[in-house]
Amino acid sequence: MSRAKVVLVGTGRMGAIRAKILYSNPRVNFCGVVDVNEEAATKLATVFNTKAYTSVSAAMQAVGGLDGVVVCTPTFTHDAVIREAASFGLHIFTEKPVEENEEKVTKLFNICRENNAKLYCGFQRRFDATYKSVADSVRSGKIGKPLSASIFFADHPCPPIEFLLTGGDIFMDLSPHDVDYIRYCLNDEVDSVFATGSSSDEKLKNAGVCDNATMVLSFKTGAIVTLTMSRSASYGYDQRCEIFGTEGLACVNNEHADSSIISNKGGIQQARLKHSFPERFDGAFATEIEMFVDGILHNVAWPISEQDCIAAQKIADAARRSAELHEVIKL
Ligand SMILES: NC(=O)c1ccc[n+]([C@@H]2O[C@H](COP(=O)([O-])OP(=O)(O)OC[C@H]3O[C@@H](n4cnc5c(N)ncnc54)[C@H](O)[C@@H]3O)[C@@H](O)[C@H]2O)c1
Image (cartoon, rainbow, N blue to C red; front, side, top):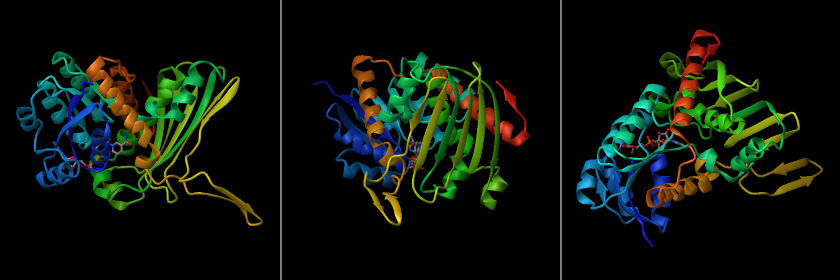
């Protein structure tokens, strides 16, 4: 069986998740871990019995016939890391978003194209069994014409303040997940955005970073979508999506730590929600890597297009401006 030769770049929250998946996938030859922090690279590489490097170039020189990289560095570094990987013609899977804004995303896709490097972005809802089933139902007309959607996304646990200050703008970082998903479900384009947000912490407020926000998206065919987001649910990872149409309703409900339900005179008690994104999306994260390998080895098309990635950041940026200006932004 042929195996894709892949290195991981970035050893933080997502890097640790991806390392485990790369190590356990029989179609991956996990050739190394890259991190600017040499100690962190060595630590993760040791766990997964692979080599540590401090740059993609160093990994490229050491590993013959490298096929691809999995980019798990902070979003503000994606530009440099993706450019470096593309310059060697490597295929690239990157954590979302590809970059912070529409212009940078467009540039990176162009650079990858010029270098014959494929660029795949991981909006994991597209690979999650429940989200996928709901999307397939809506797109095939099972609820008739979609009229509205209500989406709630509350992160848990709240990421560190350093992350929120450097890469955690709620519009740029969090909203693209659901914006991409709902655009795909409705098979429609956003016409205008209104957003409002607040900062629960003085440091976030001073830096202009919201940790709670609501976006109202008006789509071209008339559907209205509200997306409410928070960085800090106190009770678990809360992600729900309800799409209402002329002939039905399609829902993504929350997943719980286990499926027990205890009923007694005191009421009905259910297990807590799943703890966080690694638990909720473990299957989707593994499927993304399967499909990245399919892309490398068999040229299988990636379901999320360049236009999808550009649109998600364009809408996220319009929402941020809308919240600043208190105005509806027409796209
Ligand atoms: N899909 C999801 O649900 C999800 C969840 C969390 C984060 N993310 C995304 O994953 C990416 C990483 O986020 P994180 O929270 O894992 O970050 P993190 O801060 O936990 O880890 C980042 C790692 O990258 C390293 N690094 C920084 N610059 C580098 C460079 N130029 N080259 C090599 N290594 C470098 C750091 O030393 C650190 O080890 C972000 O783009 C974020 O948006 C996605």
